[in-house]
Length: 442
Image 1 (cartoon, rainbow, N blue to C red):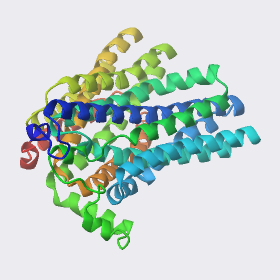
Image 2 (cartoon, helix red, strand yellow):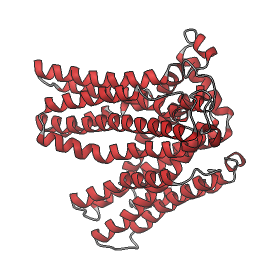
Image 3 (cartoon, rainbow, N blue to C red):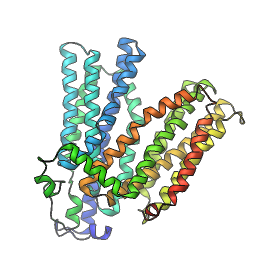
Image 4 (tube, rainbow, N blue to C red):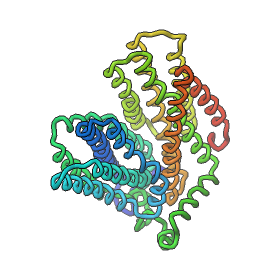
């Protein structure tokens, strides 16, 4: 299929070399727009939380702003998938970035006219996170249409790189800006960056793959029969339709359940007990804990860059299953290292956990990207947004439950038991999943 996508295009009347150049331009615009948008949201969330802490001195007010930023992803995740499938995705991506810039400008105007009250900041945080939720789903669902087949893995890997860079750089840039730049100037710069990002995304060809394949250009990402019936169908009907489709696909059900339990066990076995032991048992300094916290996003960035250079695999089954097993074993090893049987200095614990975190992070990329590519190839375009939205909601939705459960368990049992037990369970689940016929055929 990839040779067809990059052959002489009857639609654009260009040769393969020119087609490759257009694809690379599309990818560059995609990554630049996504990176600016995600960085803007991450920088805003961190910088404004520091501003709140400075003004109020309240840890609760500080954490509340961070918590508010996660609510839209849980509440609107599935809805964003319906929106992505019902409306023109290019218009959604461009307009939501520009709307994010407008929100920043309104908050700036409010701060200049009066003062930046907490309620205004919280409202802006909620609205900005909502825009980000409705921005990410259509953008991710559009990647198969933005590139040709042979660049699909590379585009998704670079997209993951943008996520990782935003995760790593956001807090650092946010802290730097907060320390050196006036808060009003920060809002102005952040608002303008969103607007410029939206403008750059307007130059992305969201139907490039169809053109390169010689198909007639569509007027929107929505099939004609869905577009004509758009006003009659409700969001609930569309949502139910998407769920019915997922239920009809056994491989999707298996991956969906995996995503749910994978994130749940990461929260119970890694996110809560390891930081608890690092601070309360091993006596990590703030600098040591900061280094450890950086390892996962840094490993994700490394994995994304490595995967972007590898040729696209004909079958994703072996790569996905081996990396799921690797991740599971790494959590199990973290439990063993943290157990009472092994006594190390805090520096030695940091070194060992650094390698484990990097291995898990690289493995997670080698899981996420092939799974995403598989979904983009097998799920119909008019249902892709709803599948992304539903899986994202399920994954994030159970995380708070996992946090509560893990928080209660670390007070009842030795904390090392949590990563060890979760690692064992994940290894067993990986074995059973690898035996499913529909998964083997991917």
